[in-house]
Image (cartoon, rainbow, N blue to C red):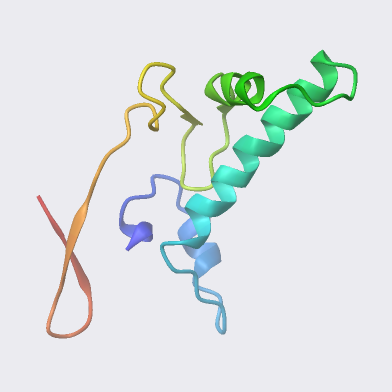
Length: 104
């Protein structure tokens, strides 16, 4: 699960509230919206509240830096590959008791 990878203990503890569940879809989606909103904020300031072309906005997205990422640490996209900068891929195996084991 996400909480096994997060270096900031405040986030996992906030996810343990009774009645609240967060799957693997929510936090990355929240972070993506955060990046888009920052790009729009930058575009509005730079282009005097008029949205530029999609190509220009995508270029701005590539340069957005989020210092307080919801999954811990900071986040930015690679300007060369458009993938998350230093992104990692994890595989988990579901154990007989329903827990998740990180596969090295």
